[in-house]
Length: 399
Image (spheres, rainbow, N blue to C red):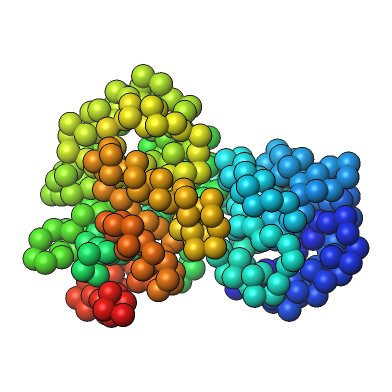
């Protein structure tokens, strides 16, 4: 699926012309340009609704950081690409800032822009095709209710592969909301709505029960296969959450010890004693706890040591950039050292190339997850994957 419309924001007219040609060559249907941040925001406020925004950082009046902040305030639902001549450290800082503010940032490119780099970045995520808020909100609420109350919520599973022997050793369950029998909605806005509407626990418990039912038929090496489920940090303030989660999995015959709960690092600093209470009881009940998207948030080591994590998951933005960006490589290496010191299992997500696999294997990472091995898939397809395995990975190990 291609992007419908891009907005290119840059104060250099020569770059805007070159970038416009490249964006069109990359398959975007239409392109609009803005000569600085103020011009871009004026066009957005006037009704321009792109699903892709390509933005420079060093611009007069409204620089790229100001634009990023304004996009977050406007809840911009399209994808963002930063293209700048600033030092890599500055670009990386702004990229992390954009993610922390909830924007759908695909990544960054240091100038000069090339079609190859642009194509690679655009391949990292499909456009969401945002609608006007007045049209989106009623439909979103109805679909959220259908997911929770009427069976429209479906889990897809993405394999986790051992880097020691290339065998499937687990899976992450990813929520999908059915729009038709063959089409699924992007779950992110529905999760956000559920958090605002106090329905996030309902959504989590429904998904957990469905995942647990499917998990009963997943075996690796003749043993029940571990599975991971994402939970909202909002749930960490609910003191009955551990009991409800245990009931959700054990009620269908799956032990809590077979399930790892993943929570995103970027929200950990928002919670205090209630979160610590909830985490402790989840561990006592047998659940594994994974810190997801590690490196994208603001948590320090002391804060991480407060919570009884069993797994550290390296964010795909660092995994994908580790071979070309010194900071990303250093972040991955630091994460591995930190996890080892804390006795945590290490999982790397976003593994897409042979080179990534070899680099991570040499670091001693335990498990990998990504399109190189398997995409997220429906339960029936995942059962077939378990039967045949991931044939390419052992070959990579021998290469």
